[in-house]
Figure 1 (cartoon, one colour):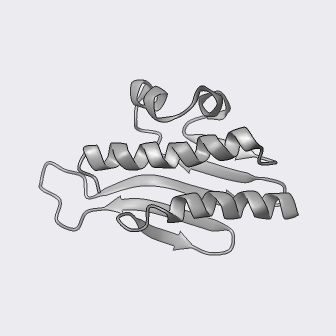
Figure 2 (figure 1 turned 180 degrees about the vertical axis):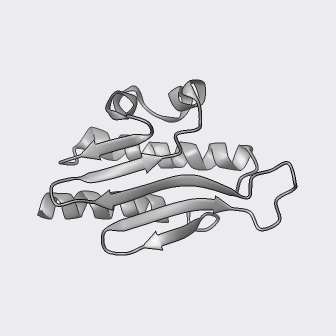
Length: 121
């Protein structure tokens, strides 16, 4: 369980790094979720866009990112390693390794830049 707790804490910190400008909509000991919420969105803009979440289970964590980005954007935002592990924006992790740690951290940074360029944050 220690390995799962550490992985959860690491990913939670990555996601916390984007709050603000994003908003943590769920923040408890087993689930952390972040959304880009624009209070003054124009009529043509979405005012709530899912960013990512991490959920702790007994033997693993699930990391979820916006699954509506499309294949082309996903290839730009996520490493090949993450894309191999990802199914509909979700990655199940039983034990964090160095590659996952770095790639998840980079994914959050890349998503932040992309959301900013889209005017979502």
